[in-house]
Image 1 (cartoon, one colour):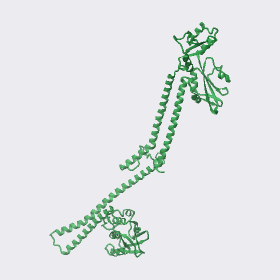
Image 2: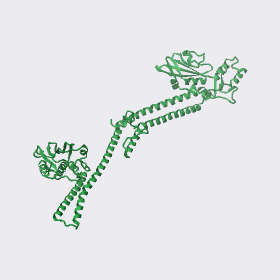
Image 3: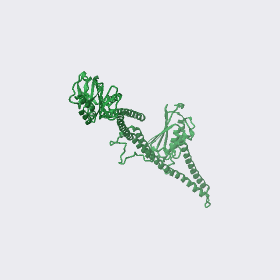
Image 4: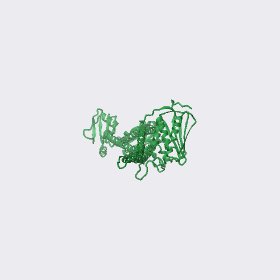
Length: 578
């Protein structure tokens, strides 16, 4: 899988996982906030607890109800009690329940339940298997206790002294209302206290919103309402409860938000280590390479961070394995290029030094002979003058050819040399060239012969430059080999290519010489002559072959000989005759 696809897949999977986690976190946060708000509401006044919270806080296991700790603490704080009754009336769970309460309720018990001294609340919960349970919660009601004491006294409906003292002792009061809502009797009640029926109904419906706790009894014989009131120990008005809930919500929100921030920081650090650290390391490596330091960066302990103890790529960097591989390749290439550049600079300096020497030697001859001719201290004979002129001409021609070679190699390098090809029979051309070349001074002591299985082979060549190729290559072969060396020029052709081979059984070349044979700055070291040449001949031959669309292949072995093959590949318009 490519790097781009792997990174895309990696980030998509990470995005999906992160999205799922965030959604789960948000959902969990909502559940957490809801439970915390419901629990805060319950702790403020258990009578206001929601069925949703009770459904979560009370579970049924093996037919028994399990009540959680928060509910027990809230019931204990209010001094109340709780029972869990199944659909058949059996009590399957209870907490802080008075001894007089039954363990099983009948149909009429549930509907007519009016326990003395307690205010009763009910919740119906639907559990698994569609079974229903009834939650019965009772909390002490002081006003009702006092009212029941009055109803049980022998003096009722009259208010005797003992009951008055009982009211004062319990910090309670009593009022009697007629059918018109007027207070016909009041004892120990706050001044000017008078309730409307709506206020009484509201206090009974939402007792937590009232500062007083009231219980009433209707005396039918006299059409009177007896109203007993005390301080309400469960006073928790809506605005206070709302404040508690708001505070709980704010606290919970801060916890959730803080958790999210911590999670974001952890994820950022994780992503930084997983992606940022490798990228910074690779950027540092690239920056070092731009400054000439091609080795991979190391940490303070001298270790390479991208490699583990086994020497393989660290898992943190495996996602970038192509990039790391490319960096290693680039580093190696740059090192090789720098080494090649240093070697090239050294070779160029040596070549320039040699070329300067090659120019300086004939210049010295020209200067010396010209100085002699200009001197009037000696009368030169015509033969001496002609000899000096001949030598000066040779030196001038040598210098001119050297400069032309230098100019030619730069023109070839910049593709500025025109190649005018025409179809030519190279068999007859090479035969004619060899007959002339064999008579040269350097070639006289070598055995040069020609071999071809075809009588005619046609190629599209530039005649002038093709002859220059042959001359340079053969000159190199005869110049750097001992007398008696056999040199064979062989031509062979098929439908795909034509090969011209120059083979000898001479001294051969080492690997370094073969490698640099066509380098225009290289001066071969196999010659026995003092004049090793300009180093341009083989480079020019190679560039001319390439300009013709061919290539040169060299095979050589020390003390065995050399085979040099010029290969020309045929195009569709090349016609050859055999």
